[in-house]
Image 1 (cartoon, rainbow, N blue to C red):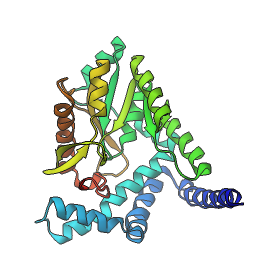
Image 2 (image 1 turned 60 degrees about the vertical axis):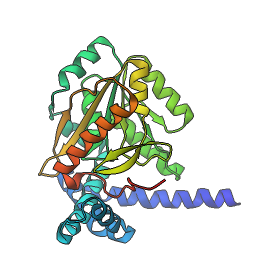
Image 3 (image 1 turned 180 degrees about the vertical axis):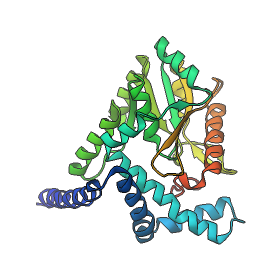
Length: 290
């Protein structure tokens, strides 16, 4: 009986979520993305307390930041998150826009050279701008871009979510032992994987990010060293129009040791965040103590 009730609850919750998502999709693409950003920044974030968490994190890192600026960012950060969420669920329209976006940056030549040679490639990024802009763009350049996804608790909504993740780029591996093994095989075979490396990881190593200690997983560097993979920071930076992107591939991180390599990534992401404060997900509990 409990399992039946849970299935019914999941089904009803999924029906509600699908109806919520279907309304914005009636709008033209640009209006849809802007509406999702407004809704998340002005309605969802205050109700969920995300705006308060943004302000808490900003106060921790920038104690002298004016209150007005923290308040502004507490709306703009979830606005970007809402836009990103709707872009994921607008796969075909999102990809059509990305198709006309060039890839730039000093690491582009190394990326193309490694791809042509069949060398494994690890693209590292964070919850910044729209990370799927990079994944989609690389797929259009012929990369088989593998990535991990977190399984949603609602199995009905999870099926739809996974279909949208795969619509942007495939393959997608379920987070867990089996999915990780599949992703490693994909990399070992000379393909590309994309990893987001900016969340607090309980088993991570204490590195520096934004002037504070932040536990950081070394997994991307470990894989790069094990499989002689190119390790490249890459970012989909949202432009001022709110719907277009600069897709930038930075210089490869030289192979040395995992701590040095992942500190280099943290430094890369920090520089991007400082240049575009409203595009990083300050909702993260990035600096949790052990």
